[in-house]
Amino acid sequence: GAVVSQHPSWVICKSGTSVKIECRSLDFQATTMFWYRQFPKQSLMLMATSNEGSKATYEQGVEKDKFLINHASLTLSTLTVTSAHPEDSSFYICSAPGQSYEQYFGPGTRLTVT
Amino acid sequence: KQEVTQIPAALSVPEGENLVLNCSFTDSAIYNLQWFRQDPGKGLTSLLLIQSSQREQTSGRLNASLDKSSGRSTLYIAASQPGDSATYLCAARISGNTPLVFGKGTRLSVIA
Image (cartoon, rainbow over all chains, first blue to last red; front, top):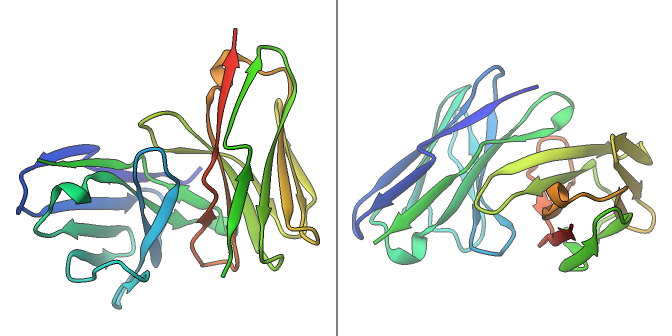
């Protein structure tokens, strides 16, 4: 089946710094990728849709200047959390639609901001 | 706007019991529906995908049904095992290239 990878799997950073998370589709191309966020004991909430060759579309309440998304190629999307704060600590997961539009998810990135 | 609800929020059963997890969605015009498993602190494992034209899918001890007209899906787990303990998430998609809308999940504990 299709595989989506994420890097890093976990990261700890200091408040005020920026963190970049990569999402790659390993054996298929994805013109669209989705970024979700999951707080402890809560479900996944869509943050934004990453579009190759165009700007990302953000869900209501998600700051586009804080969460920068770049869909650099048909296999790579990056999410940069700028000026991170402790409240940004969360589990970030990306996904990409494959054949039959089944969603394939990355393993997630756990971000802790101290 | 599509909303997905899962009941119950948590469930504890003895090993060997058959169980049903429920999922409902507000917009019956879905493209497909997926059931996932999530272990604590981990990512998602896709269990079953049901296209809108299908009524059920089976994989091993798992069976998922879909009733679009009533806006419901169920995940049936037969002969539950302690290893089945996890959070089960239901998610619906409105069209082919749109993101999934997730329910809040059912936290299952299977007691040996």
